[in-house]
Length: 130
Image (tube, rainbow, N blue to C red; front, side):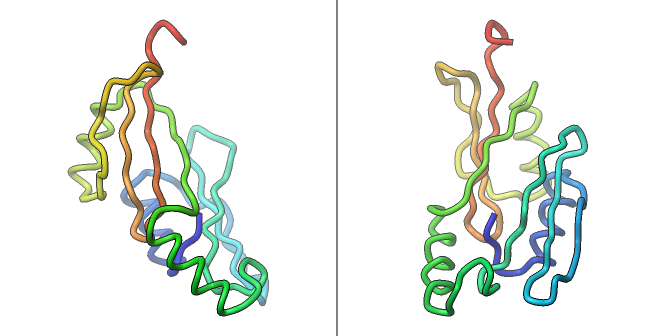
């Protein structure tokens, strides 16, 4: 996920979404910062826009920042057993909800946005598909 402030991103993903810190290493030219949900082995890289290794130039970083803020660059899908409960919890934690839980052919689905513009979809598959 592209972010403009890694410390703010870490705080958001850990305190508001329930992720935990996985790796935080200063590589000199960039900070390798990953988080993961406690029940998962997959990690999410919180990549700072502007790090040369990620963007190549300041011009590219500016374009990437604009696209990220529009919600067009990075997004992820998370699965839950109770989309309505997740909605209530995230609402209480002041997470920006851009789509409330909605019944769809593939299950119940909702969407949130992180402070940088990245979209996160949270889906509860229908009971018959489990």
